[in-house]
Image (cartoon, rainbow over all chains, first blue to last red; front, side, top):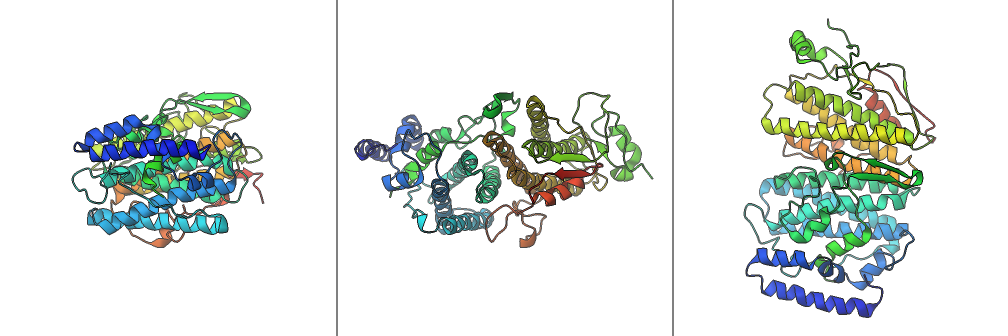
Length: 266
Length: 239
């Protein structure tokens, strides 16, 4: 997380080198994906452009909750990513015609979310980043076909991530007039997630913390989904649950931004 | 003419025998006991159920009521499957039942461990459901899942504790996943619409805004009331 530009740029260079090395050596793509997973947080953390990071989250170590504007810009960044992903997906014609009909519906939803968030934010809205859905060559979402293509893995990852991302922020919107819309986007992302998971023959929900994308780097999207305890701190209350599949867990803004960072190039 | 409501004997659903006894009209045999208690001696009560939104437990109790209705529907259809049910459909409905049962147990424990009164086990009214019919069962499941999503989204606006709000969020997204799963059984081509026809007026997601269809708390209470024999009442709603 960029507490200073020098730290961030050094890490960024290291990790760009790593990514390029991975991409050039990716004769065996499965091997490359395993390495990407092993790189873990470091790959993900450091390629978020500083301006974007500064706009959408408080500085590292800050303990006060993000402002409403920061939350909405964070959400807008995710919606930019999803809308652009589906736009490129549809333009690429890699999906079957049956899938494409639905992806057009989903793209329209994501684009509407972008428009909505931009209208609320007005002059405070961040600009759309430039996305690279190959993540430096690790994926081939718009050129690959086959029985379990990358575009479906990425779509699943982005939708499941979106659910956790919104869930992680709703508490920061209590008492504001945008909570209603945030909740209504949150449930739409979950509907999308279930649909995309169905295309990949995954259950509509997340079983324990199982990452069914087949991409180790996406383990972080599923880690903690098997949480068996629920806390209500104001009441000093802990309630155990017996079936974690029946509950989706939140992710922090920092974790979400780290996970999408490899797809953002500027 | 079968009774319009079967009195609670603690059995969570019509027994298969009872079901068969009514044959084709069993579908109108009426209200089924919601399975909110493992105690066979549980007493059901058709007095109005009051959800007090003066504190966060109104929302949690309302969520508990919805989970009871869902649990009862899935219990019945898994025990007395509709004609022609496929194994994968039965597995899906059973998995959703397990989720709803856990929501029900969790919400009751949450309310009670906070020292508040949880609503009693409610009798549900599925007189309009033909449990022999795939179309009827799945249409009802879809209504309940969509209602559930709308109910959580509306009730969450009344919650003041951030932890309770997040917990409602943890459940509602799974309800939304259920909704899509049920829709996909009805029609793989229209995973987000209500019914098999693509009609913008009936889509769960407003196509103009990409937002979940708006339902006020009063609206979702009204819709939910159709599934219970007791009237539902909300008090201390913001004006």
